[in-house]
View 1: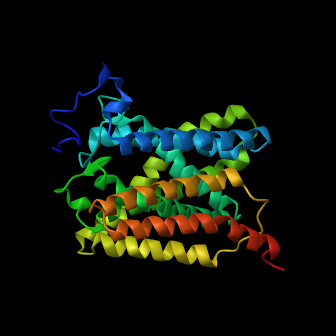
View 2: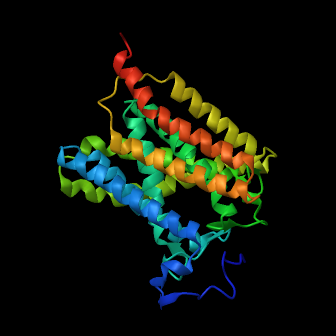
Length: 321
């Protein structure tokens, strides 16, 4: 049994409403960095929906279909995890759902990470077979600072006894990186494969089976990792190999020229990375997370800043010219 982060004398501090579906705390009763995370991620989650809705109004249903699939997948994944996987627990934030287990911001962090990663990769117009690998990598790049900073700031905690979480990079279980790479990539590939069949808004209901299929195929994708572990191959080696393959696909797959700059999309990774850079810097000043977290946050910020210049380079010289 994992003791929830924040459980103890101050768990009920600022409690306004406590029911099984919803629990509310006063914002000023939460640590400032927790409140800042909530506000930022919920705002970004809403803006990713705005981005998808704009595309829908322009006649492209795929972004909205992808967003809905991500949202359903995220909520379903969290609920399933609470009932069948006892190896992590969230802190108590201002708004909590489902027996105080699901923070509101977590329902928005899935679109923030996955939608941003997938929408960005789709601007490069990879072939279908390569899109999942590329999207998974970009989602991981966005997630790395979040995964490193989060436990240090006590946004959540991982089990110290679960063998699946034992092998870690920068304090983060490598299975978390593999999860984002595999599940995110699968979701990107599935929604892209379904795209040709999206001829009317009514077919957006396919987001539900697409989300559930993502979970099923994601579980299947974990079988080699667990199987190799039983044969003595560490999770670190398996995840490193998966990253290597994905990077190879990213570099070698054909890319076509992209559309005009999408400044709203660019704002998502930039803002998210800058926030984690600021939190990492604060932690360094306080003797916490250390320079590794600061470096990772800085690298993610640079990647986000280079995002648009990369597109500009492809526009100046489209592949094939």
